Structures are given as structure tokens and as C-alpha cells.
Image (cartoon, rainbow, N blue to C red; front, side):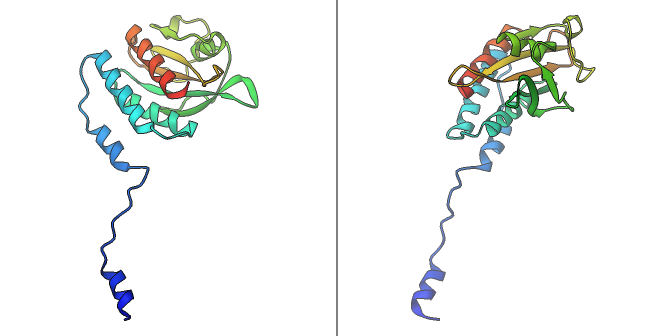
Length: 187
């Protein structure tokens, strides 16, 4: 073998560090989060921002937010996004989520998600069965919080839907922190 070729073989290769580091996900899964809900949200918000730093793909951002939130709170039963359909601008279509099968499409103004899309306001619902026009995608859902998601220009792009199988599982702490996380991630 020529000397130059031999030198190349003997030189240890230094592995390149990928931009997408699987260890980040493993590290997040191993974190012990605070018991206090507001503190836990603050910790998760920091982790979401860290994981998504430099990621511009909207689907990746939504999938990561849904996954990290769903895995951080025991009272979350279904966590995901309904995205404004560009072909049908007054209709939401299921996007990235964690949980059982979701409804595929929801019209603006229909159910809790449609109300959030229609009004542009967060819907905090202690008893989904008392909500006029509630859509039962999963009959085990008892309470829900739905937060509108806006892009940097202030256009509605989606809603984040979080359901619980417990009544009155969500409060103002959930609402405030979900709104903060979504604004920091998408606006």
C-alpha cells in the first residue's frame, strides 16, 4: 500500500456532530420535572426552545411541541394541532398529535377547536359535555383547553388542542403557559 494511503487509514476519524442530536430527546426524557405546575411549564418551555433552536420546519416544530407537552403532564390525555387547511381556509385539519385517533376535520365555529379558530381566543373548558356543539372525537375526554396559534404576521395557522380524561383538569396556569409557549415557538 502506498505510504500516503496508509497514513489516511491510520488517522483516526473524528465523528461529525450532527445538527440533529438524538441524545437531546433522550436527555429530555430523563429530566425530572418540578411538581409545581407553573415551574414545570417554565422548565418544559425552556426545553422546547432548546430542542427547536434553528429548526424552521412547521411540522417538526408542531410535532415536537405536542410530544414534549404530552410527555410532561399527567393530566394531558390528547395533545395536538389542528392546522388551518390552505385549500379550505375556514376548516381545520388534524396535524401532529399525541394520543388516540383525532377528528380529521373541524369547521371554524364548530366545537371547542372551531370556537378557538373562529374567535382567535383560548377556550378553557372545565366540562366538555356542557360546551355547546362539543365534538366528541374521543368519548373519554372530560375537559379541554384549545389555544390559537399565530404566525409572525398574526395570521391563524393552527390551534393547539389539549384534552384530559378528568373533569376541570385545566386552569389559568395551563392557559397562560400554553399561550407563552406557542407565541415563543410560532409567532
